[in-house]
Image (cartoon, rainbow, N blue to C red):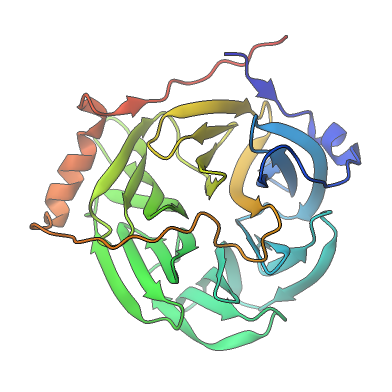
Amino acid sequence: MQFKALKAAASLAAAVVAFGPSAHAGTLVTGYSPDGSFGSIGLIDPGDLTPTGATASVGDVATGLTWGAGSLFVSTGSHITRYNTALDSIGATALGGFDYGPLAYGDDMLFAGYDGFITNGVLRFDNAFNLIPGYIDLPVAPSGLAYGDGVLFVSYGSTLARYGTDGTLLGAHDYGALASFGALAYGGGTLYAGLTVAAIGGDLHGLIGVDAFDLTTMDVTLSLDDPVTGLAFGDGALFAGFAHEIVKYDPSGATLDNLALGGLTGGPLAFIPSGAGGGDCGRGTRVCDPGGAVPEPATWAMMILGFGLTGAVVRRRRPVLRTA
């Protein structure tokens, strides 16, 4: 397979390509950085992972992306900035003492993970960037947020959790001290999560898809070479960002395409549905019965450690960039 490479950051920033409809239903957005000191965002055709050339500088490295209410929201440090589909900045908010992280949009609200000096959790904003009273308090800063079927999904430390949009905890599962979750994405009744497991000889990286109702039934288990930096679901596909590439999977975890980022460092991802007014693309309706006993955290850790050894695991090999 011949992999495509993004242009150098200077060439990307100089490109002026109007945002418009493609042959596919939506557009993929990626955060990236040429050197880790400042960040940009760029648009990608999700069908064949071809960069459109439309980019925008966002100042600091992007830590969160989401789409909702006809806008793209980008978190960078203590700021969240709102962009239109032409990647023009149309508003921003900042709260001192907070570093914003992952973002999600749903139920006419923007959810923003934060790392504070004293507290950690998730804040809520309305469409005018007004802070909504009340927040989700967490023991550590959240590493991933996703919205779907009226539920906010949160990852923090070794835990996956479900919340109502009012902040009510609906359910949670701790996968054990060895596990550490990252980015999240929701699609078709499945919650996808980047995962790192501490192991003797080095960390193991993976991507799992769990039943969005019980947070324990694993539908997808991928062993990876590198940690996941971003996830997005749209057009019936899962998109995963890594340090130097973006990979497109079908919902079962089979690889469909790759985009090599060359010398750029990848970050969070978001999906813009065609003609959509909210960021909860890929909605599904699913009534799930957890059934059976749920393994203890230590058991989960051992199961996860072994996923790279099972025959059911689909291993993604490290791609090699080729020139035409």
